[in-house]
Length: 288
Image (cartoon, helix red, strand yellow):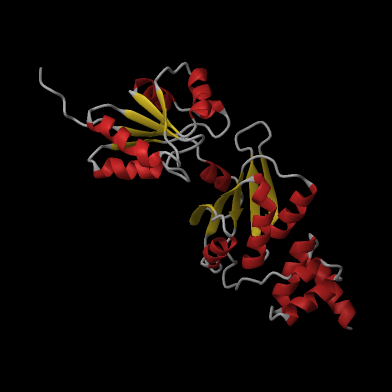
């Protein structure tokens, strides 16, 4: 009997980010037909497989065992077995170790086939109301303050919409860092995407901070941050603006930091959630 030396295929199967109805028919078929499923969290994935009556064997493949498990999976693929890889939710290879397995597979000459489906970044972006013409995905920001700031400073004058992920316990701190580095831009916080309590909180970075100080953040978040307006330099954050100053005093404070009058009025109006005309009239009244 002639030995079959043809390599198997590595399938990257997207899974629902919340609503199980977003599972594609193709993904269900591939998961049923694969020799094994490599999962980020086997306990989490086992529940998904049970829902769709899938009985394919599971193995763990995650950040902490990828160095050992990756070569084992490549050996199975090289022997002709088809393997499906899934993340806890969404598309494998986006902010998870699936990328490393893809690189190993390609180096070994193993075919890699994407099976697309739900993705939190794109789902949040298209419903954000911000520009989708060009965007940049930052994923999860670095854990250390120094590296976060180094990364964010690279995008201060980046003209495109930014998309990033954040956990609920880090949300307010991250929004604060974004506001400090970028100024008070338009932004959207999306949570519980595709689930019963899906929510989009739209406003500016500072209004989002105010909102989540009053409402405890729950669930995993996708943040969408607008690029600077055309021809507009990023306005530096001014914490003192919201520390008991009148609108006119806040405008004067910003002007004193080098912001031009028009931009200062716009920022104060945005931070306070009041019309620009009201801020402008306040400035005129107090300087007459």
